[in-house]
Amino acid sequence: MKTLRRVASLAALLALGGLGACASRQQAPTASTPPAPTQDAASVVQSTEGGFSVSIPGPVSEERRTQTTEVGEVTLHTFIAVRPEADTAYYVSYTDFPAAAVAQADPRDVVARASHGALEALGATGLSSRPLMMDGFPGWEVEGVSGPRHLRGRFFLVGPRLYQQLLLHPDGKPPHDADRFFESFKLDPQVTAMLTGARRS
Image 1 (cartoon, helix red, strand yellow):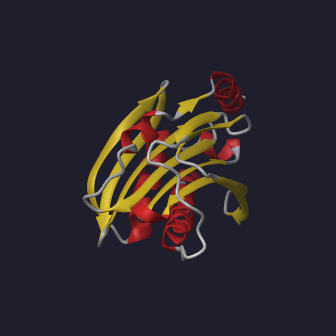
Image 2: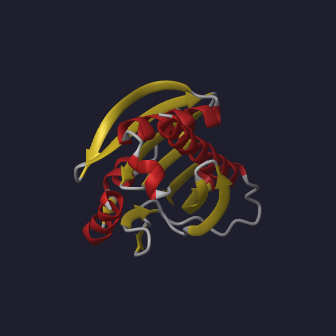
Image 3: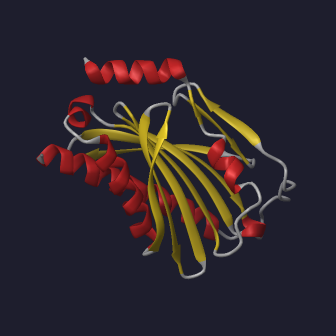
């Protein structure tokens, strides 16, 4: 039970850190920003290592950050795109937890706590929260508002891997491609088979 709480809390912490990076990009000075892409400009990010693909307005920057936690060392892999002219940021990440720790956790609890962590990152008031499934894997979607900003996020746990998908935009002004961004997220069956096989071992 203690390990379950640690994993779920860590998931929330990673959501906090990831959303913080996303928000900081959204607020970055734009004086030297190159011309923004057209509204329909989007690139399909396909991460072989991450085992997913998603459509994100380009350009997309990729980063990774490693940190030591109570359940071991974890690495947060992030993909971020910002539309400064629309004050909008798109964010996708994945993190691998130690398999032994996740094996003792309830996947639904992990994704639910991660979603609430995203709201806490903005000091946001929750507007909606609901469970999801993707290819048989548990997920959670949350929406919230903090001052002028609106957050929508989805979280999925595949074996020991937590996927996060976040969108930040001005409240009341969602980008036209918001639904496309979320619905375009797909998992690689070969990678999910490897991840779930590792969990059962």
